[in-house]
Length: 458
Image (spheres, rainbow, N blue to C red):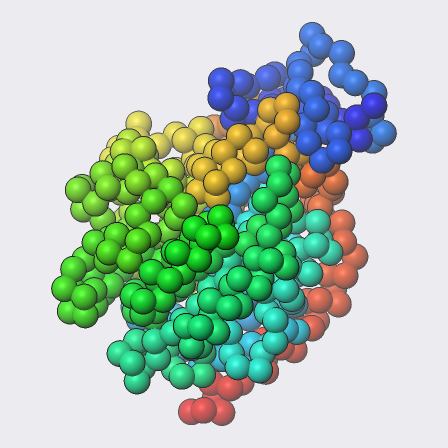
């Protein structure tokens, strides 16, 4: 007997190796993994629980490959909204220096719930601000993910170069390299699960070329190799980064990335808006993944990422919501739709389809996280993560010919049901966990305190 049977779908888009699309399909999940898939001609197994998907599209759970969840405490913060990336960071670093375990746990709970409502079942988080005395921030956010039942890939971010060292962050949010490396090893030992179907994995994530020393980048790559975990950072996200790297290192960001030993399939990077054609080929040869963040890229004005060229070169490309104030809505459905539209804007109507966007949101994200064939796909033995998307109501009136095209071209939409490891996280459009009202109240109190620091400083 299966634990859960999702049945009656208008279409099941497996996004598997054969890209099967099953009209009237069903999916069975047992012990957290997909145990069977079929259509109307096959008899589904008995199940302890049945979830109806009549008139709906069923997809694999979406995979968020780049986020800064704590930043929802400064969502749409007015003083930071009008400038470039560097101006935005300089405004917000002092506010983020007030983070502690309560703030991070609360923001993670709210942010993970928001992601689940948008069909995300696996998410990364790049937490690179670790104020002295703030506590164990990574463990605090993992606790929120475990309470909600979300599959979570937090990354131990870091910054070691403050303004006095020629970097951007203030002293209050940077750490010494030895402290960063020791804590990275501690967190991997405490939380990282390398097994198939793991709910928590840790990656190591120095923030950027302008906030971390080359020596720390090299040492982190060596530690990741030793511990067999993945690497993540920002790369080539803004023309100002090109200028900085040329002035400080005498080379472009991707050349510097290679110089410090990161050019491999162990790494995935965020944004990658500014690579030239030769650099795209290098990324593809290395197998380095890219988290495409379309909303953030547009809000910060960094440019249009060469997504089609990267995919053609064999670069694994996933999607990322990114953090608040640079992308204030954490919906992977929105990122998938925006990726489709930007792809068509760059290279014409045939350049990016709804199926391409779905692949980036699922298979592409899985490849970035080193979990191809395990997450982001519906196949026997893959994780039991899926989303049931409604295709009814005014927004979908007349959209009868293709459920996948309708899913992104119509809307806006949110998940009807979000299932992680065979358990519902969102059901009938509502979060299953009951603590959300209390957590929203707590979030408002904490966010108000953090944002007041800006006025007090002024």
